[in-house]
Figure (tube, rainbow, N blue to C red):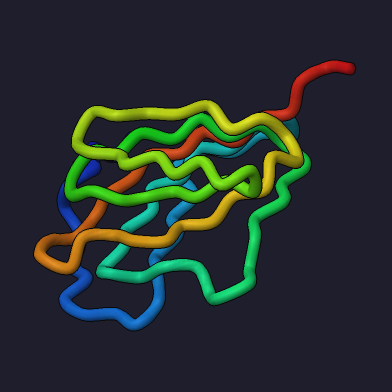
Length: 109
């Protein structure tokens, strides 16, 4: 058993977002995402088979959905993204790291 802290990381500067799986099972996984000003590539859309519940724990971000809805997420804001709901990250904080906690899960059909 190891104690860890969701806010402690050793990332100083990265050109890539960091995705760290914390817990996983056959029907779900939980990950910490650390963004340092990154955004989705132009024209790229996430189109995931599973549902995703995501919360911003530090920093801020903007998510754009295929239907032109843009959500601005600040500390404590969360959103449930259903399967195959196309979305992309259009902005993360340039001032501080954005720390997300995401739960990806499959539901019975």
